[in-house]
Length: 105
Image (tube, rainbow, N blue to C red; front, side, top):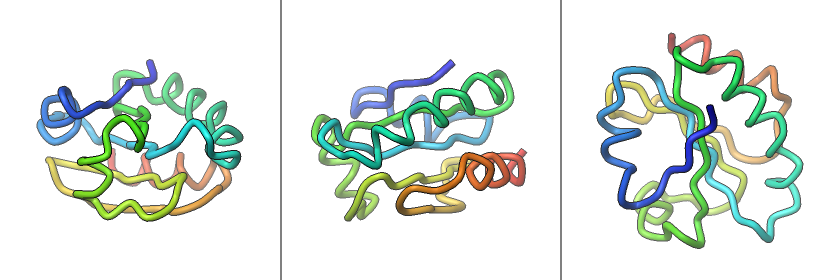
C-alpha cells in the first residue's frame, strides 16, 4: 500500500513508525517525479507490511519539505526509528531504491 504523507500525519506515520519508511518528496508539475510514480507504487506493494513507502507533495506540505531541506524533486528520504538514514535525489533505477529499503529492514 502506498501511503500519502502530509503535515497532519507525518509524525505518526513516518517519525513514529515501527518499520522503515521511504518518503518520495514530489510535485505534480515535476516530469521526473511523474516517471518515478509507477516504480514507487510497485515498491509500496512489494514491501507492504515490511516498510512504509509513500509520497509527500512538496506544494501541499511545504513546511515538511523545508524542514528536511528538499531543494529539488524527486527526493527520496529514508527514515528508521524517526531518524533520516538516507537520501537519494533525482531519478534513479527502481532497484537502487529497493536495495536501500532492503538495507534498512
